[in-house]
Structure formats: structure tokens, C-alpha cells
Image (cartoon, rainbow, N blue to C red; front, side, top):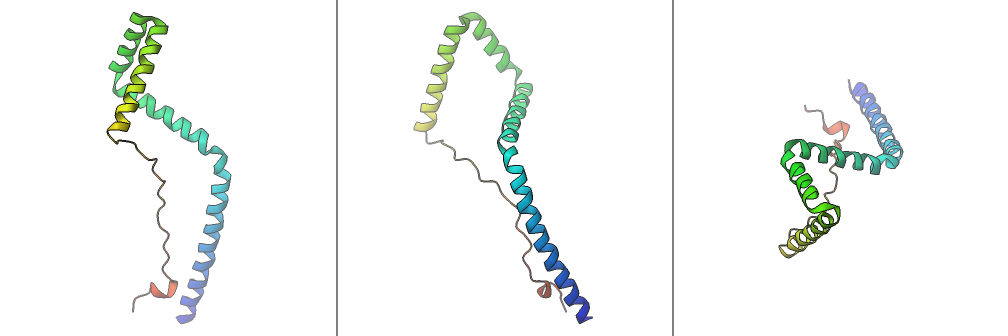
Length: 115
């Protein structure tokens, strides 16, 4: 039985090593897609926001129609500037979150068996 456990432990170590190599290869192959996928994700989030809050689109369209393109752009720019200033003054600056990765199971094969 001890030989079977040793064989299983060796096989597990080989599989863990192979999985690490595959994770590294996958991360390398996905790297060029990271920015386009992030942009697509932002677009999906914007679309979902618009679907949940159509009044903002209607209000923006009415504002654009009432003020005309030049004046509407000026007011939008001023509004964004005021928003950023207020956000900074209130200390609500947000740092981008780091992606979380599930921890690997690092238990040794011999420690996982209970007597």
C-alpha cells in the first residue's frame, strides 16, 4: 500500500508541475487579448447600465437636442470636471483592483492522508 501512495504522490507532483507549465503558457497566449477583452467588458457594462437606466439616455438626448452639439459638449465637459474635482476633494479616488487568483493546493501528498 505504501508503494501505491508513493506512486500516487509522484504522479500528483508530475500533474501539478504540468499544470503550472500549462498555466504559464495560457497566461502568455492570453496576454495580447487582455486589453481588447477589457474594452469589450467595459462596453458590455455600459450597455447593461443603459438598459437598466434608460432615463439617462433620454435625458442626454434631450439635453443634446436643446443645447445643440457645441453647448452640450461644453456643459458635459464642465460636468465631468466638476465631478472629478468633487471626487478628489471628498477623497473617493479608487485604485484599480488587482485580480484575485484562487490559491493552489500546496499540501504535500504525504500530509493529505489521515491515519
